[in-house]
Length: 64
Image (cartoon, rainbow, N blue to C red; front, top):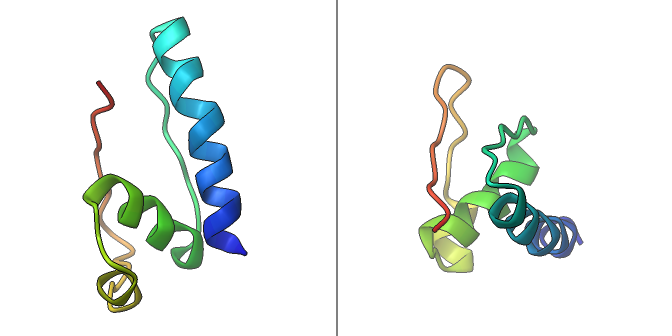
């Protein structure tokens, strides 16, 4: 269910970012960050489930 909500959010966000030409910062807990990383890093479900979410790092993704 979390992954469906994240994908729906991404589907709305990316066109808005392109249209408005803006950058965004997303702050989320680990359970929500896994599907974000799966989407942007093209991971399998198994790879996603093995991810550890560090508290002192950030992830940067470029949407073209």
